[in-house]
Length: 146
Image (cartoon, rainbow, N blue to C red; front, side, top):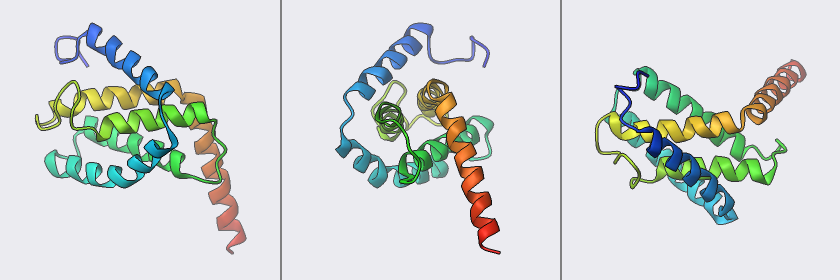
């Protein structure tokens, strides 16, 4: 994104990043339940309010789905510190009160997309490990199902 087009200043980006890490330090187990209960409605709200084919929306939704699946997968061993980062990012996504209010068409999700990207970048190796795990377990399940 061209810096002139980015509605989030460098200072705001730095604040969002710091907020994410601070939130992750304070995540409680109950917060995971909030994500599980509220994320499906938020996803539906996003998809109803914007064109899901827009590249930024499509990318954000794909990332949210990956993080949500990774968080919910009981068989995948993920460190609590990684899980808290995922939960903190998804809680930010769910929250209607954030840097750019979600009611602003498309622009309202730019900060959400930025925070989700921060989580994806921070947990890059963990996400790769999860994707390999899924590919391996799905491969084994399809072979064993024959």
